[in-house]
Structure formats: C-alpha cells, structure tokens
Length: 347
View 1 (cartoon, rainbow, N blue to C red):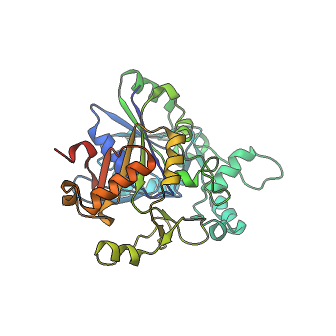
View 2 (view 1 turned 135 degrees about the horizontal axis):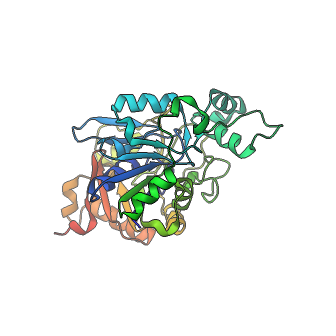
View 3 (view 1 turned 135 degrees about the vertical axis):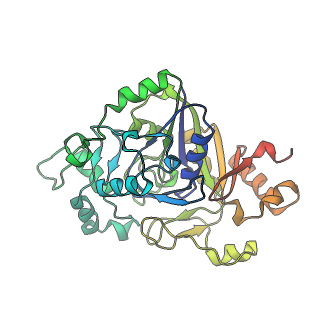
C-alpha cells in the first residue's frame, strides 16, 4: 500500500517538512498528508511562489494547497493555532479532516508544563503537548488534575470532524499516496531514543507515527529518515549533544558569514554539534528506512562541489555514508527542497 512516513534521525529540525513536501510533489495522483503529534515543533517549507511557511500544527507538506490534510486519533491539537494557520494559508476547509478521537490541547495543559518546570528542566517548548498526553493517559483519573477533551466534543472543530479511518482506507484501496509527516527526531523519542528524561512525550519513530496515524504496517512502502550535517538540540538543559560546537565555528569551517539557527516555537538559539554517526545508526536500526536524506549540506560546501570527487563536500558525504553503513539517497542544500539524489551526482 502507498504510505510514506518521514521521520527524523537525530534531535529534530532535520528538514522533515520540506522532505515530506517533496514526496507529496513527486507523487502521482491525489495525495493525502497526515500530521501526527502536536505543535511542540515547527516544520518549514517553501511554496511554489517561494514564500516561506513555518507551521506548527498544519503539515509543511500541505503548503501547495493541493492535498487533503488529516489529523488522526494520535494528534494533539491547539485549536486556536490550527485555525490561525488554516486562515493564514487560506487553506480550503473542506480538505481538512480531523478524527473525532484527536485530543485537544487546553490552556491548563500549558500551565501544567510551566508549573512542572519542564521548560527549564528538559528544554520543553511549553506547547502543552506533554500535558495533553498526560491527561489522555490519565483517563480522567480522580487524582490527576487535567482533563482531555476530544475533537468530537469540541465545538470549534465540528466542521472538520470525520471518520478518518474510513477516509484513509478508501484512499489506500484506490492506490493513492498517503504521506505521514512525523515530528522531532529519534534522539528525542520517549521510548527508544536513549536520552530519557531529556525526551519528548511521544515515540518519534516510524512505528510510532504509524500507530498515531491509525494505519497498518502492511500499508507502508516507503520510510524516509532525514538527517542533517550538523545535528542540533534546542536551547537550555535539553540533554547531551556529542561533540557540541558553536555556530561561529561552523561558519569559520565553511568560510561563510556567521550562521545561526533559532527554534521555530520559542525563537531561542539552537545548540549545535558535529555529526554523530552512532545516533543515526540507532535510528536506522529502529526505523529500517528505504530512503535516507542528508540535509544542510550548504554548511559543508557548495552544490557545485558535488561534481568534484576530491572536494570536502564529497568526502563528507562519503564519510557519513560509511559511518552510518547506508547509502545517502537524497541531498539537501537549501530550505527550498531536496537538491538531487546521490545517484545523479556522477551523471
């Protein structure tokens, strides 16, 4: 069955949004995109007119406004944020479908995270996803203070509520492509990431995303693992980052002017480190990807260097491929999209 899953192989911000958008653009026929998780991370993409969109609730793979968007039962929705992004995109509301079982993020969930000290202790974005997950798992326990409304009983979302299980199965039975846009990265995964408690509140692997989407493993024919040349973690006490360096050091290495990255949600300067093959290798073991995308190669060299086998860029790509014991399939140099496949380098 034609289901693509896009997940991150490090600590997030690998460029999953633009890769999911690329897969949707390359698909034949109508496409449905699924956004799992919640708005605790931002996904960025550029539409065909070159406009940048940094989205937290709507998927980046929808910015061409030619796909159906599904929020499955494994979604956590900040309603005000969702409606504001739909409005900003001028997205056709009839193409947005929300499971009646999707959970709603309330102000009390955000307040609970702040009062629990999670924003400082683990570098949480304070978006309320963790609180919403806790409320859902608590199942209205009398000794837990948070409630967990679902979309079916939340009036502002009534026009979008649909039986998405039926909708998705109808699409898949017709052979139409479904793209699941995962969130964050493997090293942040609650279960297998290896950095608990400096982790997110969900499983961020392909299996986790598929479970949240409510689909079967036999539906999947494409798992894309996205990695970046210099992995990042968010600011603060967000957890270990092997061989941490600075943006100034990377700028000096590449001969570029100073480059810095800031988080989409909190606008804080990201921490950055040298490439670590071990975490990517563990992500490969957990996800068994059919495709690997290496992004942010402009931090290493220019696109023209691909055609010089002795260039620092080609040597870096070869070194990464050897270290992770897998070939690199797609290469990304800019936020606009995937530049080309590895197979095209020598043509």
